[in-house]
Image 1 (cartoon, rainbow, N blue to C red):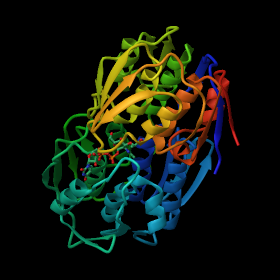
Image 2: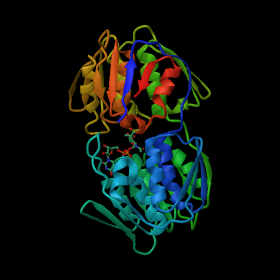
Image 3: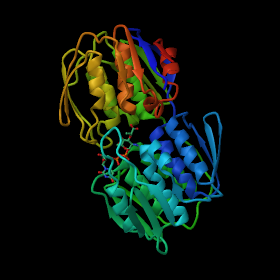
Image 4: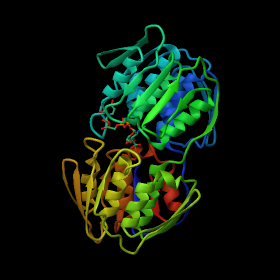
Length: 417
Ligand code: EPZ
């Protein structure tokens, strides 16, 4: 198990290109199952969650090969409809394969995704909606067995919560359903739009992504498609936070500033100068950050839950007291205990975190609790005086390509051993 070693206090300076979005490429890789053809996916990042998706595709009988950041996937030949426990457990979002496999084969067998570091990850919204499309779903002894009685049929669905994964799962299952499916109260995240664009390139008829009503007109079949994945807005926010806490100045390239408006406004509130031009975001940090008054996570376009740990880490070294509320996940504060080991002064009560900024953090031995919590520890380690050692870096590798290389290019003193 590798560790990251950071000698903090170095100002970050320079340019960095942001890689493709994990939360976009994962559902798109599942969607390739529906094509039954060769698909070419550009801007595909080197992430362990992508590796897990490739393992699932190959387990199902598909062929994958990488040419740099381009992944070629051939799903012509599918030999199975199940995803074994060990593959399901590797990645929380594997449930999105249910809609794709059942949509293509009329049956699917997946192990129930367990809980994860963010608390229980229920899939009730997914299952209720898929049943309304005509999927018979039996849950027994930790497995989900699905079977289409005749053909999936379009329906008008209303999600009780605009779940990102459930919206994606329904889109995939509805591609070949008979007639029209309308998803009301759909998630509006940019990754949903990217999935719609990929599906339509492959011959599907999906519209409305990015709004709260997504419409899928069933078609008979899809074909291969070539697609470039959008930039990762949370990775962008991560490098913004890293520059912000080190008094740095960075230009992030190949971003989509329009996907980060709520995040940009928080860094501006903290005293950073943030300029956007085309696909570039330039952030110049003040010598001392000031606190944000009150940030609450909401569904898109509200402040994203995944950027929560990043700004909490930044607020830890800001001047003043910041209040943060996590409204999306039940327990997303496990990383805060590790931030405290670095000297952060944070109190939590249920969904509320109150951060009393300190003038400096001190390096310590800490361990990642989850993907974005791990990123928060990197950010805090970059700001801290002295040496920080971060264990369980595999959490971070799920969503960040070459994090230590990228930070080193910006002037950080960081190594992986
Ligand atoms: C996606 O997770 C992202 N993952 C998450 O990113 C992100 O935090 C989340 O959306 C919210 O934006 C991927 O896209 C792979 P949800 P997902 O379904 O689909 C509850 C990261 O760090 N819920 O919108 O699982 C659920 O418990 C990850 O990259 C139900 O109650 O998120 C949570 O409280 C972390 N029943 C809330 O909805 C359901 O059936 C949001 O979940 C489904 C969800």
